[in-house]
Amino acid sequence: MLEGFRIFFGALFILFVPGFAWSYVFFAKKNIDWIERVALSIGLSIALVPLTIFWLNWLFDIKITLLNTSLVVCGLTGVALVWVWARRQSRISRLGERVELWFKSLRSK
Image (cartoon, rainbow, N blue to C red; front, top):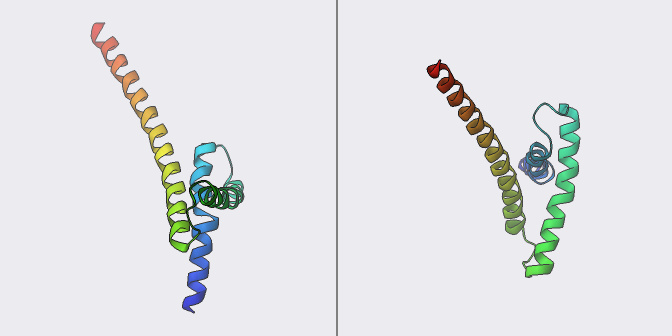
């Protein structure tokens, strides 16, 4: 029973989570349907995780272990989340600047 949970959540962690985060980097929230996002998430995870792990192994001679794989998945997911957060913050700050300009134009009238 415990082994089944471990397999399910491990597969979800490796095969879905990084691609899901990166799907928001490539496509905005409303640009694609949820089924397309799930399929894209699985495909991106299958592409990103092994390529990153093998690249790190080949270039920096970092051994392929469970801990290193988990750190790579967390790193890939974290980079995507920071990217989406920064993009959202820049939009919010631009909106704030526009509102300030609007208020200044109202005061000058």
